[in-house]
Amino acid sequence: MAQLMSLDDALNLSREDIIKNHKEYLNSALVQLQGLIDFTRNFVRAEGTKVWDDEGNEYLDCLGAYGAMNLGHNHPKVFAAMQKTFGKPNLLQAALSPLPAVLAHNLAQLTPGNLKHTFFCNSGAEAVEGALKLVRIATGKEPIIYCKGAFHGKSFGALSVTGREKYQKPFAPLLHNFSSVPFDDLESLEQALAIGHAAAVILEPIQGEGGIIIPSDGYLQGVRELCHKYKTYLIIDEVQTGFGRTGYLFACEKEGVVPDVMCVAKSLGGGVMPIGAYITTDELWNKAYGSVETCLLHTSTFGGNAMATAAGIASLEIIQEEDLVRKARENGEYFLGRLRELKEKYPIIRAVRGRGLMIGLEFEEPVKKGSLAEKLGGKFLNKLSGEYMGALIAGELLNKQRIITAYTLNNPNVIRLEPPLIVTRPELDRVVEALEDVFQNNSGLFSLALSSGKSILGKVFKKD
Image 1: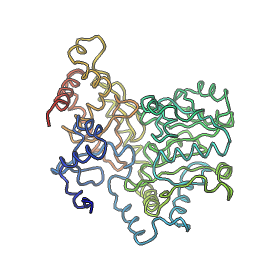
Image 2: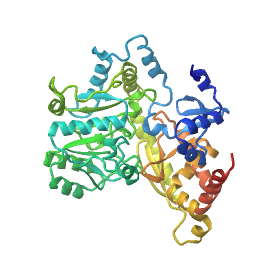
Image 3: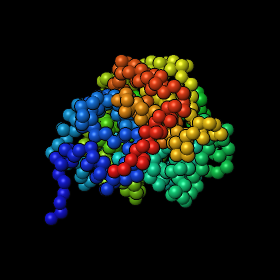
Image 4: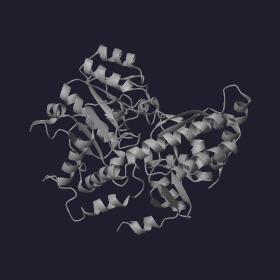
């Protein structure tokens, strides 16, 4: 008989055993990368905006699982909703479950304009995959236009519209007839639309992994008008921006834009269950899947399961009951104001960008080419500090301030600040004070990179 570990075994593993199992059975290089900045702690409890490690240390979560923790950790109402499904069929395709129907109804009431039909899946990448297939089958056209700097996921179709070569190139050739244009550039978009008959344009209303890039006022409305002019569908990816994160229930509502397809996920599951979805119009749904012959062309085994949709129903209720959209807007304005004050004091901060509680801090590159610092730092340290200044600062915040953050995938010199929408102003003040402490105790860009880099080099060459 195979020697299996039990759930109790898993819950009682030491930090060293967890690291060992990850190295041996999961992604060993990722363990090495996370170990460089001590992102290998064993967190054993989570509630609201806080998590605790196995030594009893308390941390403030200012990462929020990349926007999945809008309600905070382990919201009791989400668990209570899921508990009501215990004993009922969770997966039963030979029936019509009431729970996905109710969640779809509620999404139709909350999403802008005439969005109505929902397809449920399990993640943001799956929602994007479904949206791309939807517009292709509905139009019979292949071309899709996306934006440089975009991040829509790493599955094959979603990767084909993700705008960073680092993620695309190793898997080339990707899906054909996909082309990119600069974000926040209506002229380039119109040129691309005028060339051929695009099935759709896909974009994020704010580029999250691109470094929290906010477009100019009127950009989204301009995209909507161009799509209408060239008879092209508009897909808006609200996976990270949705459900109150930006101070609007959906970020596209700031300009009154109604897409033809909206992708959502992350916080729809209340920070507990994986669930994704795309929502579209009657017209588009019926063109794609409106007949008995076509209704099963795109399906998901786990999409719309009882527990996930129960969590989704509860999440939407909590967002309204706790007035989280207003809180995100008002606390975001306060937080941005305090962070901009920091920028005036510390030249290490190149930019402060954000809307609501979706905020990015971009840092200067500490090591300039040809400088004495470059000669002193060495090849490894210079590369590390030049490309991952955000990671170095995130490491300082975690290890010395007990605040959890991370850098953005398409711009590693930006750290994201995306706390749960239930965050309080004293907690936001704590983040500002922690950042100030990091900058005060590491005067100068190079000294911060050097101090962090030496620590990292020590770990790289440390013997087991």
